[in-house]
Length: 262
Image 1 (tube, rainbow, N blue to C red):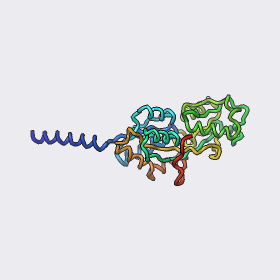
Image 2: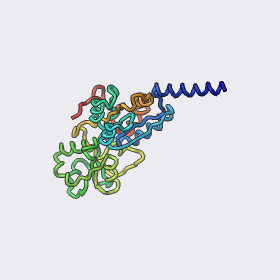
Image 3: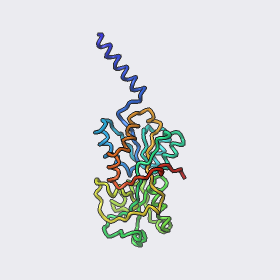
Image 4: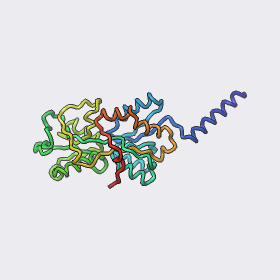
């Protein structure tokens, strides 16, 4: 009886310790769709290295931002821009001082046709019926596509031909299924070994759009989750950055992490 009583006390102490410390083996990570597959690889390595698990929720940055603002129980947001994490930090939904740039993305013009794309002039192809981009209102890669087409003086000409994906994953699907002859997609998708995409492509010069700074932030819901904080540190580790680089993302020099929303 005595040993059973002490066992019960031990369980109570363990439960109380978990409640006080915020100990958890799971981290709920909301991730922009362009970074889903790199995160899956990181999650596998993270679980091997730490024994902890990532619960991944994927979507457009705009939708994930709105869900976080409305109380969705995400511990961490991995956005495809810096604007939404900045706004979450400003509004107190994101934890101040935890925001950082984990990757910089690139845009690529892509077609399944290996002869279709030879450079920027391919955007002026008069035979093109549909050009896929992500929705500029909700998806940072769509916003970058909009900016690039405007800089090139092609937005008004091409707007009637645009088909807008809800996110960059759906944009890729439009091209992969032949519903659009070309699409402005993420370079990381082109280098994703799971897709093994062929065809022709042209990387959009970064000078044609604002930097696609992809930022991470700890959210208020994960403030007491020690494992969430551990994961954010792990995302900066060499094991994670090696995976991120393999998908074609770049990394920023010191001092370019924070930008103000516009």
